[in-house]
Amino acid sequence: MPQFLDYADADFDARFNALLGAKREDSPDVDAVVADIISDVRARGDAAVIALTERFDRMSLTPATLRISPEAVAEATAQVPQAERDALALAADRIRAYHARQMPEDAMWTDDVGARIGWRWTPVSAAGLYVPGGLASYPSSVLMNAVPAKVAGVERLAITVPTPDGVLNPAVLLAAELAGVDEIYRIGGAQAIAALAYGTESIAPVDKITGPGNAFVAAAKRRVFGKVGIDMIAGPSEILVIADGDNDPDWIALDLLSQAEHDESAQSLLITTDAAFGQAVVQAVDARLQTLQRRDIAGASWRDFGAVITVPDLDVAVALSDRIAPEHLELCVADAEALSERITHAGAVFIGPWTPEAIGDYIGGPNHVLPTARSARFSSGLSVMDFIKRTTLTQMTPDALRAIGPGAETLAASESLEAHGLSVTARLRKLNS
Image (tube, rainbow, N blue to C red; front, side, top):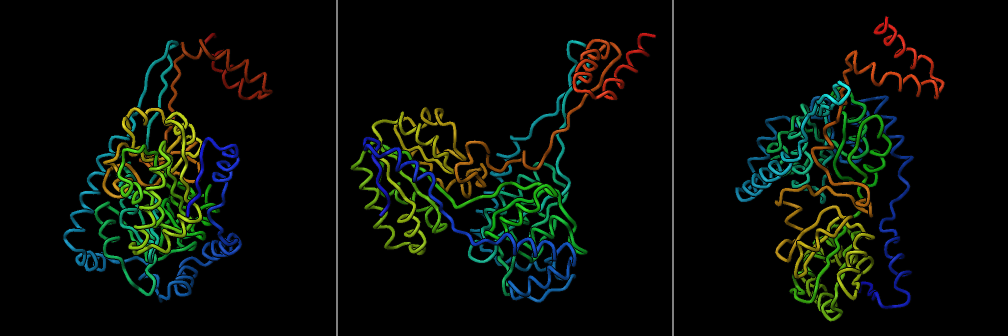
């Protein structure tokens, strides 16, 4: 059974804070192992990656077979059923169209003293996408990471995908093809992150690494950050549904379970103004758990981390939602659009009862790589902005330097940076001579 919290209870605040602070993953201390793997890859390159792949994925590779050949990709993608091909193509088109609108514009203008200032946006030259293998191999994640990179103008996009026992996932390779991926390597784990960050004889280094992974991948991304950029360190999936009593309990139950089935550490929360409706949703969850294929995973998540919170009104619901700052937020209330405008902290908002979160996972268009663990308070989901950077532009004219140069001289003197000030003074003397 999930937790039941009522805003009217005297101990509500303490219990709610405990819910927010609950540790939802108990990963082993993998940092020392990851540090050794990264060091090995930096020192031995291909040889280390090949040895680690044989150890963890039971595959014998050579430098020539680290990369999946175009012929092997074509052979695998031909196996994808037509319905899946069409769905992936539709998703890719929608994701591409949505992210194209995110592209910012360059700007340059002349200000009131005659200086020309502005900015220019340019893509990173190369990006690496980590794609999990095995049970957590999702073609949709390939599209969500790779399409924005290509929309941003990334020239070289490489992905690493572990293939335990040599088994390829045809749908993952098709998603890579649809997204315009340039290189695909059959490696995974911390060694893949190290190879992307530092390069090997066969794998050129990249500038930014994105994509989900297990505790070893997350630890590796933390360690290589600074050498390369990373997207985020994502935790277990989470969903918050705010619903009134005018909903189908089964719909809401399924929305909660859509995240619970990801991981035993995922979290599904319901905030409702109707206590009886909350109980009906719990009964619907229990019924659905009898039939789901992933009922053991979803059931553990719901039992250990699920909660139903009863509130007196939607004002309180909004306040609690912003404290939770959920990865996914569904609004199933009478005027969901108006309520959405009052939300400040959420990774993604799904407005109205006809918008299940699963639409966002696959086909809606917005990205499904989102901030977790309350980090939506200060960060955003993956976008084209993760694959571009801004360069500022400044051009002084003689008159502009006369106008603002003395201020720079004064500030340089106040900071005791003599050469700073003199670099301006020399030019002003030339102008005044």
